[in-house]
Amino acid sequence: MCVVYVMSMTQLVPLSFSLHSRDRGAEKEERLRRAIRQVLKCDILKEWPLEPEVLPRPRGHLVLSGDFEATFFMVGVKRFSALSLDEKFLLEALQETGFITEKLEEFPQATETRLDNCSDYTRFFFLVARRRD
Image 1 (cartoon, helix red, strand yellow):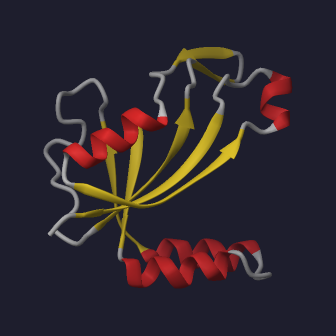
Image 2 (image 1 turned 90 degrees about the vertical axis):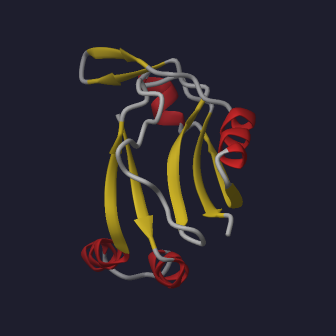
């Protein structure tokens, strides 16, 4: 299961600046909670993972985060399989479904994750895409 957050860009831009400031954690969390308009669950086993939701409206934004090339992840001592996702597939899928990728930030796997064998992902990503008009 994945979670999709729907936010307005007018809220997202100031939020991204404020999250990088020196505010305390609780203040950042509250700002984020106010900016999120809706949280949608998706089932990747369905042909339309967000069904019955329609997301987002024209000129609306989609904010995603996830891991590239993961085949497993651990929750405690329990190992779960992961559907491996690569950047090319993600960007093509978004384009084919009417989205324009505005920003994609990638971060290498954290050393502590690699050392404790929690997951084998190669990169973590944040993505902002906009629905074509």
